[in-house]
Amino acid sequence: MLTVVAGDLLADRTGRPGSDVLALHGWARSGADFVRVVEGLDALAVHLPGFGTTPEPPAAWGSVEYADHLADALAGTGPYVVVGHSFGGRVAVRLAVRHPELVRSLVITGAPLVRATRPPRPALRVRLAKRLHAAHLLPAAVVERARKNAGSDDYRAAQGVMRDVFVRVVNEDYRDDLAAIAVPTTLVWGELDDSAPVAGARLAAELIPGARLEVVPGAGHLLSGDLEARVTAALHDQLEQSR
Image 1 (cartoon, helix red, strand yellow):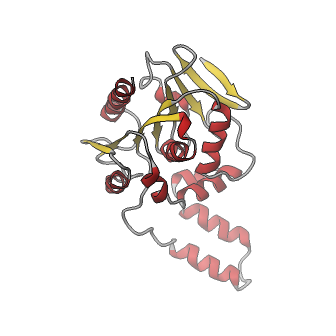
Image 2 (cartoon, rainbow, N blue to C red):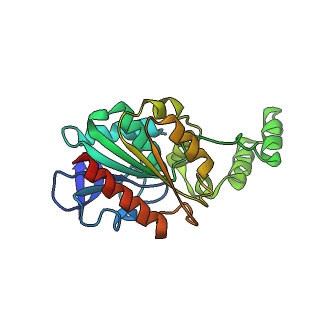
């Protein structure tokens, strides 16, 4: 059931009020991704600002602003077992460190938290367009078009403020926050995740005190199939332990 949590924050609620679980979805997804994961539980599957049915943020937020917005809406509730997929995992990490009163444990999957390799250089045509623009030989619109054509599918699909949000978030660093997490944390990763490679998950697990990493053979990035099943199992394990 779609419900207003507070202000403009919307979520799909399952079970009774006074939820035990807070589910945070990935980029360009919605709380609907967690229908099977939270089935039978008292849970809020949030539609983060700019996704699903929730309006865009008023400015180019990073994961910190998303976490603070959640904390304002959830003030006086919880604590929750927080399950975050991809972008939602980034927000979950910030929430656990900045607002620990709301988080009793974490289950994170497919979140690009630590880069295991050097970032790729911008495409040659983008570098050339930027140089020509700096020399006043190309208009800014041409540079923007080159960036858009060379960007990822998510970058090309994003528009307006959400594209600025995307650029900001993909350049964030989480190492200090990972080391500061003080709640039980389980990382569940698809072996074949090409959006958030498992090598980065291994580095993240080393930084989070006491974290456990489970790699799901043959699974990719999206929350489906065996990955969905293992995330569901990890969530139930965290609920049992917290009780």
